Image (cartoon, rainbow, N blue to C red):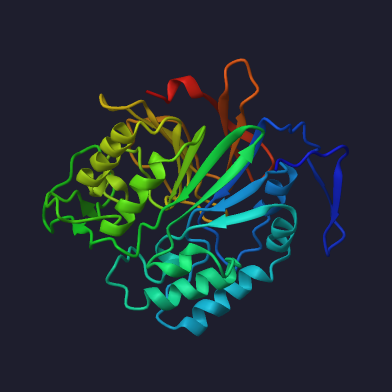
Amino acid sequence: MTKILLQPILFLTAAGQLLTAASGDASDSSYKIAFGSCGRQTHPLPIFKEVVKQNPDVFVFLGDNIYGDTDDMDVLREKYGQLGQKESYQLLVQNTEILATWDDHDYGRNDAGKEYPHKEASKQVFLEFFNEPKDSPRYDHKGIYHSVYKSVGDKTIQIILLDNRTFRDKLKRFPKGKEADKRFFYKLDYVPHTDKSKTLLGKKQWAWLEQELKKSADLRIIASGSQFSIEYNGYEAWANFPHERERLIQLVSKTKADHLIFITGDVHYGEISKFEHPDTYPIYDVTSSGLSSTWKFATPNKNRIEGPIMDNHFGLLTVDFDHESPRVKAEIWDIRGNQRVEYTIPLDEIRF
């Protein structure tokens, strides 16, 4: 249930710093989902203190939750332990529910897919760290895909956590010696697959996702480590599997799954993208990537409607079902406590 705060809540850190969580005007018809990705376990991660001030109902880790990059599960476990012992992380888990999926660096290797040999062992370390309940269906299938349902008054929010690593085929390398389009001022790593047998999600996850999208929900949030709604940029993204992105669009159309929004990470900056397709409503993608990481530049993205935000930040969705026109307010907040992006998505815009 949504938390209702009657007065500000004060938090005292080990260093004696006083923090104030925003005293909420939350009601039975509103819900706050904070999210982010790309946090290095060796960094103090003060961004979590800014998250707590916003008093979210849940925080979703979108991947690269640590930089594991190892074949040694003891090393991986130790790096998760570094995150878990951090004062700012402890503050976060004490004050909000945590949900998580992974991306490549916490999966085990940079840009890795199904070829990573330790994916089952890595999964166990992941589930243990995030305290996955022992009766969770995540233990019953390969990969970590999962869904969670939240009741907000008489409404239902469906949060779908995708696994874009365990089943994914290798990416297709940009050919050596080939010249890139002049709009790309940087070295391209990958090109889109033309072989439609290559998969991002895998057969079983696709079948599961179809069943999820058939279920009733008043808002659907899909959490993906890789960006969905951007144009091709030569780095990792759904755009490298254009047939898989098209498959998702057609699945949304087939199941008439209204009110779907992506939240994504990976790129070390924040932005909002809007993907338009004749067979469905606009697919908004709110990217929050940079809990501690930063990048030198933002890639070309004709679908970008807000951003980029190059500072450390987190994303926040505030769902308001009680408004005259029910809506989702998408925000990006930076490390200094500044709201850098605010964009309202009316639910009537994202439906059939």
